Amino acid sequence: QVQLVESGGGSVQPGGSLRLSCVVSARIFSSNPMAWYRQAPGKGRERVGYITSGGLRDYADSVKGRFTISRDNAKNTLYLQMNSLKPEDTAVYYCNTLSQSTSWGQGTQVTVSS
View 1 (tube, rainbow, N blue to C red):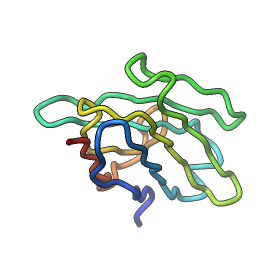
View 2 (view 1 turned 180 degrees about the vertical axis):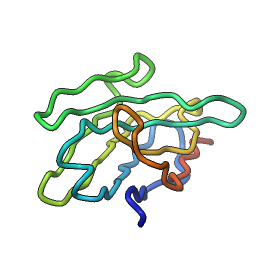
View 3 (view 1 turned 120 degrees about the horizontal axis):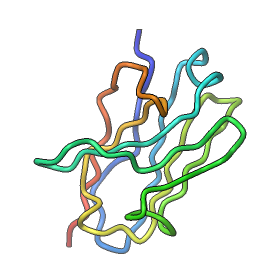
View 4 (view 1 turned 60 degrees about the horizontal axis):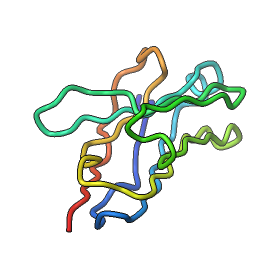
């Protein structure tokens, strides 16, 4: 059973925007703080930020002020609004619980290049 499905990636120029979505199984979404992660080529996976069920958020320093995480509890969907994108944001983006307790999905590729 697929529990995490990411979408919304693509190719954009520096300074552009993208909005990623992650549909999560209801059982997981309702009981966990959720997070976005990314893995750039040749690098390990890093956490971009997270949001609790009550809406408390935190972000990696590298994306603060540019990325916003939100969640729609009625749709069991996690979002990542990415603005002012930079080439160093190029990566495969994943969602998971904050504790990474669920099998990883396929992710969605984000490429920032001129």
